[in-house]
Image (cartoon, rainbow, N blue to C red):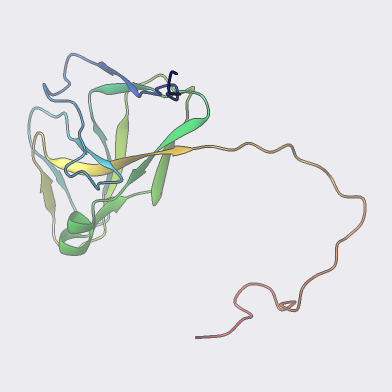
Length: 154
């Protein structure tokens, strides 16, 4: 009797000339995201409120039905105010260009990104697409008819 083995899904990575030698990796067995590093030749300083695209040197080949979410690193965010411009960045499965990380300095001091520094986390997640249907009549609202913020404080 043979045992069933589900098909393996992988994230393809193409390394550009300026890519770092090491591939992104999960730092621990329990890590949800793998760290992406700055593929820069010289340090880049972000002034307070300055935004910059930081290259990774990588092009991802993401299987259809998945996305890669770019998320801030908590240490950089809380210690220095460095986060992603758009909160969470989405890389779609049909995007075939270099992954660049849109960082912003929300801190009060300039922050210098060093070459090969870990700048964000990449989390791979399944995607569901639903068909859109236009409704011909309104539907019944629930008891929270006040809308956004109507449930009060905890």
